[in-house]
Image 1 (cartoon, rainbow, N blue to C red):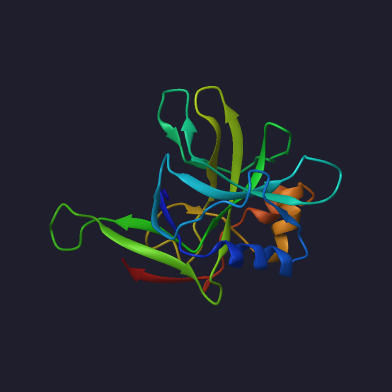
Image 2: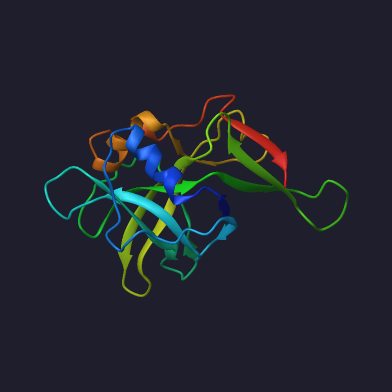
Length: 199
């Protein structure tokens, strides 16, 4: 499962991506200071876009929230299976996009050592993508987010038995505002979506 991602894009590029889609983007906690990060791990804060409930005007908002909340056994919920589920928005939980420009997967060691091989996945032709996620308010950690997963597409299958969902930009608005049915958006990525290299 994906337990590490990367965000090396500036805030301006995130804003531009939403502007190109004609989605108003707000910063309810002031514009976040998004330092370039090669590694965002479980429990680290991550930049998420979610639907704004501030008023009736259609808009998304960008905030930073902890990646993962504690599950029933105390283990972090950082990936969440999406099959057969529909996800609704409310003032205390809902859909989000986790903004990134890369994510990592690990495979068994190739040289007989104990160290796993780390692979970086980036999207072909786009410097930024949105990972389908959920955010919720948790009684012990406050607001936090998790990534949604599906069966792997052909680019991911050689590396892992599940994949996180990359939401096509044309679906960003529908995913965030809840108008797009979850199962129409939450699908494996087609072949050629990702460039893969050893990290």
